[in-house]
Length: 264
Image (tube, rainbow, N blue to C red):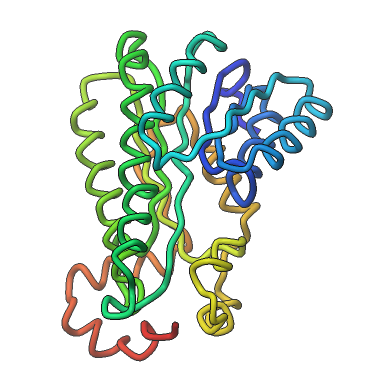
C-alpha cells in the first residue's frame, strides 16, 4: 500500500499483462486511479473491469501502440479531457529480441527503438507540460540492467535500454528545480511473458530461470516508490553490483564473466 496514491491518477503503459497489470492492481489497492494503456483492448477491458469491481476506484483504459506517435498524441489529448490530471506516468511498454547483430534484422532494430525509446519519450512529453504547470508529478521509466551491463545476443535491446537510462538521467537534471520526480527501474530478468518474444529458443530462460525476479515483488517496489524522490530501483541487488563492477573494470569483468554472459 502507498498512501500517497490515494485519489491520484497513475498512467501505466504496457498494462495488459505482466508487471504493468500488477502495478495497476496495487495502485487501486492504494486508493489511486490506474489508467491502462496497451495494444490489446480485450485484455485491458478485462483488467479494468476486475479493478473497478474489486477495488471501487475508476480505471479507464485506452488502446495504444506507443510506437505510433500520432496515436500517442491523440490518446493523451483524449485522456486529458477525461481525467483531472496525470500524477504519475509509468513508461512500462517495451520488448526485446535476443539475437546477434549479424542475425538481427533492421526491422527488429527499428521496432525495438520505436517502442522502447521513441514511444517512451513521446509519452513523457505528453505529461510534462501539465506536470510543470502544477509543479508536481512523477515519471517512472522501466529500463533494465541490460542498460547498464550489455551482454552478447542482446546488443540492440541493450542499446535501447542504454538510451532509456540516458534520457531518464538527463530528464531528472532538467527537472532538478521542480517538484517532479524521475525514477529509472533497472530489473534483471523477470518471470513474465516478455521472454515469449525475446527468447524464442527457450535457452536463456532455461539457464537463468532460478535467478528470475518475482513480478509481484518488482511491482510492489515500483508502486511503493510512486510520488517519492527515489532515483533508481535496481533489482536484484547482486546483479546491480555486477553492473557497477563492470563500469569500473570492464575488461576484467568481461574476461572473468564472459562465458556466463553468453547464456542465450
